[in-house]
Image (cartoon, rainbow, N blue to C red; front, side, top):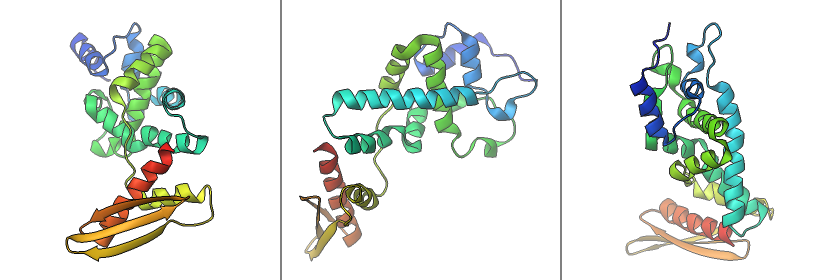
Length: 213
């Protein structure tokens, strides 16, 4: 039997979220992991399902209003907000995992648990306070996360529009390497201590340039 939530615990969870619930059953469900479910107790999986859709809609709306770019660019930018890494950063920023109730050891909450919890929070806030409340929550917590592999990201982006790969020209200098990359009629440069670092810097610069054109 899971211990009842205390008023102090509920208030602390609301402070972390920056939102006070009218229906605190939604708040409790938000922090109930599927491993803990027994009998008629609800887990946060359905809230996660809803929150995923609300999150994607609100991020899409924000990009539509703020960024004057074509569809492909907006799609790439959206990935930086709704990726697992971005959601984990948002969760960690406000420390939601400390309130999660689950059964078993730490292995139970590895993988996507943190990002799923953040989506469940979005869903719970949306149900309790509507789209405006969910939008305000995301504005406080969610930030874009850069891709980990700019050369791959650039190549994937370029090949959506042309069946070619970016062309790199990299030369060694007195203090490292300088790389120039060309694709889709654009050019960018980058420097680094190694050839790989220089090419990655160049790819990052060109990727950003193409996204914003």
